[in-house]
Image (tube, rainbow, N blue to C red; front, side, top):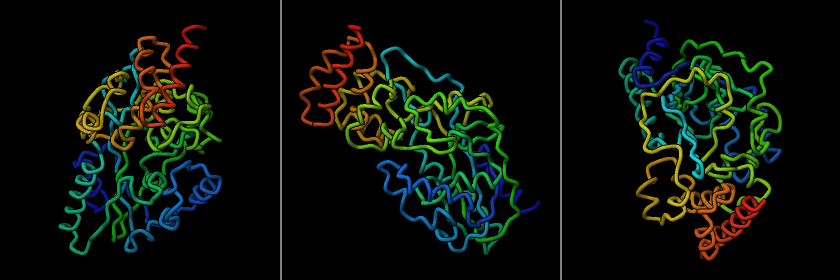
Length: 340
C-alpha cells in the first residue's frame, strides 16, 4: 500500500476522525494573517504576532519538512449541549480533559510507526501551541475548508473537532484541497452576539466572546458584557448555527468530565484549591480561577435571576479589584433587568 495512504490509516487507528496530507510549502493565504495582525485584531494575544515566518512557511519551524500530516479529532457529543436557566455555559470542547497531552501522545504513536516503517523518516508534532497556521495546512490536506466563521469545517463531520499535525521529512502524495462550501449562508456572521466578524473569514478577537472569557485577563469592556450573556468559557454560537454541524459525529478520544451547564454560584464561590481540583486538568485552567469567577459574576448580571443578588452584594467587597468591579456592574444590571 502507498505510504501516504498507510500513514492516514494509522492516523485513523490512533483515533482521528479525519486525516490528510499537505505539501510543506509556503502558504499564499498567509498574507491574510499579516493583514489581520497589522489591523490589531489579535486583541491582547501578543504571541500571535510573533514568529511570523513560521506561520507563513512550516519549513521555518521545521526545516526538514517535506509533507504535513493533518488529523482531526472529534469532540462532538451525542448529548445535546444543555442550557439551564440561571446557569452558565461552557464551550463543548472545554468539558473534556486538556487535549494537548492526549493528542501529542496519539501523534507520537503515528510518528513512531513511520520511523519503524521508513528508517530515514522523522518528524515534528504540533497541536495548537506552535506558531503555525494549522487550518490552512488542513485545507490543503483535504481535511476541510475554512468557513466564514474562520472555523475549519469538514463536509462529513462539521467543525466540532481538534486539529493535530505532524511535519514529516519525506515527501508524500498530497490530498486535494477542499473547496469552499459556505455558499450564500451567513448564519454564523449574523448570530454572533458581539459582532466579532469584521467580514466573512475575518474574526476580530478583540470583540470575541471566546477571547474575553479565556484569554483576556483584565476587566471585560462594558460594551461587550451584555452580549456575552451566560458564556463562562468560550463560545459555540457560530458553530451551533452552522448547517454543517448536523453531520457531527461523537468523538472516541475524550470523555466529558462535567456538563456544559454550570451553576454560577458554585463557580463564583470557588477558591484556588477548589478550582485546581475541579478544573486543573481541563481547558478551563487556561482562563484561570480569576477569569472563571469574573465570567460567572458577569453572567449573573445578565441572568435576571434575583437569587444571585446576595452573592453579588458580597462580591463587591472582594479584595481583587477586577472581581469587585465586575460584581458591582453585575448587581446594577441585575436590578435594572428585574425592575424594568
